[in-house]
Image (cartoon, rainbow, N blue to C red; front, side, top):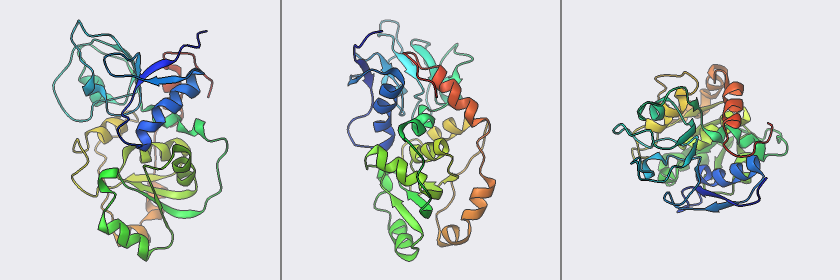
Length: 260
């Protein structure tokens, strides 16, 4: 076994929850330290919508791909890298000749970063993508409804995970807010607050395809939804075969594995 750091590429321009999960989960599963590296020099890419950053020409370095995906629709690309897992079917179908790849986002393993589940404290946790952080509707609803916990997607990972786990239901316009809720078994639903989140829902459809869920549409955030719609969200919530999806993602990790 080597102690050499894993050269991992992740998006480091902002302290965004989903991006910050990547080095933590890779360290947790590998037992090794992680070093930030560029797409040209890295050994591994994991969480995030980052596949568009990697070139697929024959002369480009081959990289281990574990659970990332494309951020938006686009052209087919050559089968260039080592594909251990991809976020979903939309990403898989873009890669020529790639079949039977493990599908699912590694953020589903974020439960591994909590030592224990905290007790419930809030009826609803509301998470916004950083592009939606200044939504006046969100501010208005939080002021009006004391049962809502605003969860900051730019806060430290452990704080975000603990806050999500303390909620009975999560509404989020940030994809990894939803994925972490799925990981922790918290019923959740996707909301769309603006058209500023890149990809027009592509990455959400990609993620949900790993569960065989098609046609998932975002809910409209409203006073009625947070007042009387949460029980319906909880009762209708489902992620088929989520435990199997989690196990396959963990098993597909290309370096030393830790049992989950």
